Length: 417
Image: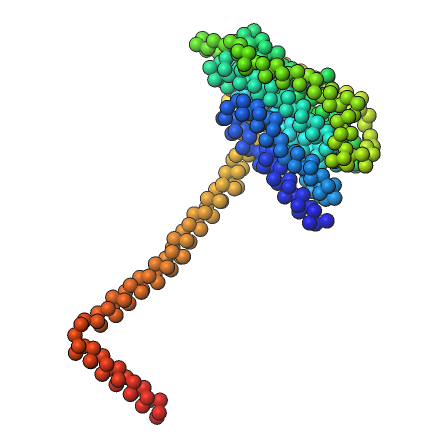
C-alpha cells in the first residue's frame, strides 16, 4: 500500500544516512580522521551497519511494499559500486578501507532488498564483515604506529618484512573480503551474489551482474592495498623506522584474523544460521527458486576475483611513485574526489541552503524586526509630541479644556443640523 511504501522509503532514508549509503555516504571517508580503534569498532563492525539491521527487522514492511523494496536493491547496488570505484583511487590506507566498508555495506543493503531469502545472508555478511574489516582497520593502525602515523600507502612498501604479524593478520582479512575460499567472505558475499542472480525476471541479471562486478573491483583495490603496503621496495623516508606493534596491539588483530578465517564456515555450516533467523525474517515461508546453480555463481565470482587480483598485480608490480601521478585519466581524477559527491553536495545542497538561509536572515532583520522597530519608533515619536502638552501650567490646561468644550459643542451643532 501507499502508506507502507512511504514508511519503507523513510526507513531506507534513515538507513542510508546511518550506514553511509548513496546519496548520504560522503561522511564515512571524513570520519577516518578519528582514532583507528574507533574506525575498527564503530565504522566497520557496529554503528555503521545499523541500517542493515533496521531494514532486516522491518522486513514485514518491505515485504508488503515492493516499490520500497526495489529502491533498497537499487541503493545497495549503486553504493557497492560507488564505494568500490572510490577505493581504487585512494592512497590513504584508512580511506581506502572506508570505501570498502561503504561497498560491503552496499552488498548487505542489496541483500535486504531481495526479500526473505536475502535477510539472513545480509546479517551473515554483517557478522563476517565485522571480523575481517575490523581486523584490517586495526592492521592499518598498526602500520601507522610503525610508520610514525603516515597514512599514505605510496610511502610504505615492503613492510611485510618488518611487520610480519600485522602483514599476516591483515592478509587473512584481505583474503576474506575478496571472497577466497574457505575464508569468511567467500561464504557470505557469494550467497548474496547467488541470491541476486536468482531474483525474479531481468532484475536478477542486472543486480547479480552489479554484485559480480563489485567483487572484481573489490579484488583489485584490496590487492592494491596489499601490494602498496606490504610488498615491493621500500618507499619511506630514512627517518622512518618501521617495526612490529606490541602484543597489546596485535593480539586483537590475531583474534579477528581467526574470525576472518572461520566465521563464514561456522555460520553457514548446516544452514543453522538461516534456520535460526527464520522466525524473524520469515525465510521458511518462501521457496528459493534457483536460476543459477551455486557452483556456477561461485565459479563466476572466483573468476571475477582472479581477474581483479591479476589486474592489480600487473599494474602495481613495477616501481610505485611516492607522489600520486597527475597525468591520469578522467575516471581516476573523479574517483580521487569521491566521484564528485562532495562537489555535488556543495553545489546542489550547501550553496542553495546558504542562499536560502541568508535570505531568511535578511527577511527577519529587515521585514519582521524592521516592522517591530518602526512601531516602536512611531510610539516613541508620538509620545514625545504628546508629552509636550503636559507643561505644568494651569492656564494651558484651562485652554485645552476650553478648546475641547468648543470642539464638543461644534460637533453637537453639526450633528443636529
